[in-house]
Length: 206
Image 1: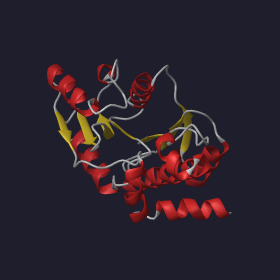
Image 2: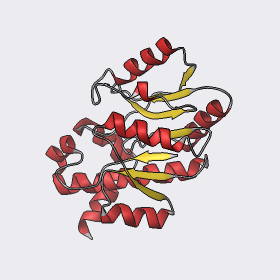
Image 3: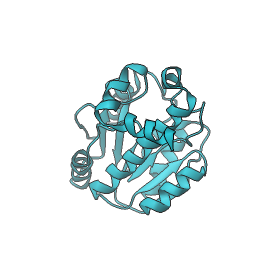
Image 4: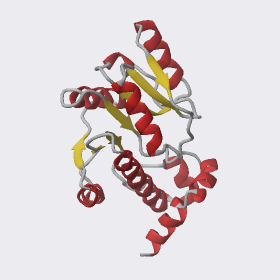
């Protein structure tokens, strides 16, 4: 299990939310989302959990120690290359890999377990589509660099483009239920419902 995240530096994460929350509170919310993603990965019990980050930030080091998960640095010139390398290296150590982002708190442990069962049963790729057109999870039983190369990350065509590449390559793939991510001001109602927003505000007062 790999959780992909960015270092929680104010002004560099959740920039669209920062317009509403301010840079510092947006960074704290990013921390809460990252911690929630690690908790979900651990609760799923699908295998060892690794936290892959863009920098060895002190808060991420604390989270990795507290959660007893390995912290690794992402390596690559863009998101696609970093994801390709992370999944390829994980597949040298395990029969399949699940990679999730840090901004989809709706993704539940039972969905991760379902993806793991599918991969263990012969499915080559599993995706959890995000409602903004991307995906919140990708699971692979074989390296698949072609899924990450020259992908228009951050656009509404990421999920559909990935499915097209899988179909063209003849890979058997399955999809989980769509989930919503947390990236825009209109997503804050979902965050409040999950109590992550109030936790971020409490953190601001400490």
